[in-house]
Image 1: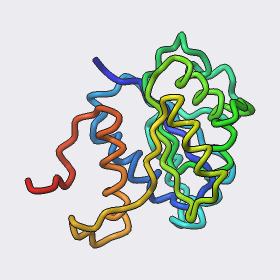
Image 2: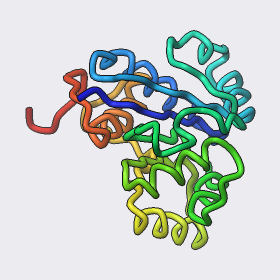
Image 3: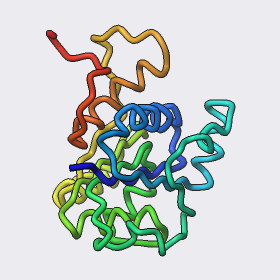
Length: 187
């Protein structure tokens, strides 16, 4: 069964995580039926600032405006099975935890949770305050997965993209996609 995935990119620092995610989704495109991408205005600004380009416009995935409530995944009937928010700002996390659907990202997350499908939030901020922790707890209790952007180093990454891959490879695994372009402990 091919997967239908939503990728939302928020304005949290860590555009390299979003870039690596989109690159890796391209590598497993044979497992995907569709990928819908939503970027906030801040996400575009952060990408330009941190990566020095606008390459987010070069991916072959369908993109949607942040307020496009006619996007297919704004409804559960479209049967998107997975949503990844990467990086996920604490503001977005808080709105999802509170059930506030004020844009396409938060509406799609609400749909994914209500349909009991897979929601993966790659939270990037640190340190966490108690509000962040409680919001993560609420989302976890609702069925979401919090996957902090905490890279590992046992694969001895040499570049920023390799460091980001240590997190994104976990995200790809959490989504149930097969990929061999990853470091596996003791293999």
